[in-house]
Amino acid sequence: GLPARVRIHEVGARDGLQNEKATVPVEVKAEFVRRLAGTGLTTIEATSFVHPKWVPQLADAEELFPAVADLPVELPVLVPNERGLDRALALGARRVAVFASATESFAKANLNRTVDEALAMFEPVVARAKDADVHVRGYLSMCFGDPWEGPVPVEQVVKVCRALREMGCDELSLGDTIGVATPGHVSALLTALTDAGVPVETLGVHFHDTYGQALANTYEALRHGVTTVDASAGGLGGCPYAKSATGNLATEDLVWMLRGLGIDTGVDLGSLVATSVWMAAHLGRPSPSRTVRALAGP
Ligand code: HMG
Ligand code: MG
Image (cartoon, rainbow, N blue to C red):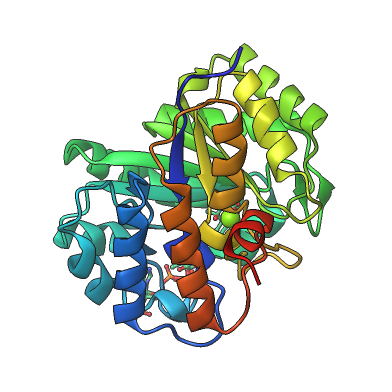
């Protein structure tokens, strides 16, 4: 059966904006996060404490985080290393995320490390976060296909997932970074992970809609018992270090499907659409989300 409730992990302010060429003013980002919180979303990824040269758009993390820290929602942030963790903890972050890759090519492109070097870099981050009672998410990118390496073997993904769990990650997010997954592949990976002893309650899914498969893949994940789904308001975003990564699954499209299935998310679709329309006006182009277009009108 399907779950009664799904927790949406909203990534628009981080994953959505990280790829924008023109700098979005910090006040606009803060207002975006505030409006997202006003829609009933409870987990809103706010920013990344990465090297500002690698992701210039998020160089204002030290200004943004305090500007939204009063909101009554979870505000996870990305931290690639101890330097990032120091910056996040200094501002009182209570949830952090490390981000690993299932493939060598993307580990190199995104973190300037091999897969194993990246895991070694995360180890003290996770240990120190756990000591500070901070929740840790472990992202895993390129779980299905990689732009340089092609299809990614399931065993390779299972291996890195186990390493992240053994390190102490509280939850994992399985990323289809370039959006090539189809439901059969999702089913095979989730089956392999649960067979390997990874509890499905600790798994989230992170789909991209490149080939229009994100909702079908999400539905398959729900059938396997997954209850945490990543999505980006208005379908914003991609990844600056993965060519051919287009938009994330739009939160509105996800909420429309879940609402139709009678699955509770706590999100008000009307105010979410209004938020994405507001953001699209700021960015100067319409949202690619079908649901936003259908509900917002011409
Ligand atoms: P590096 O060049 O190897 O860095 O980059 P380093 O460790 O050699 O350090 C070089 C300098 O950077 C040092 O300064 C450090 O202090 C400084 P120096 O001593 O030379 O003056 N530095 C930092 N400064 C500020 N904050 C930090 C930091 N770390 C080092 N945290 C590094 C390695 C990991 C830093 C770099 O590769 C990086 O920042 N990468 C981030 C890339 C990124 O954010 N990608 C997007 C997120 S992943 C994604 O979008 C996928 C996902 O959405 C899921 C999916 O769809 O698959 C999660
Ligand atoms: Mg993404």
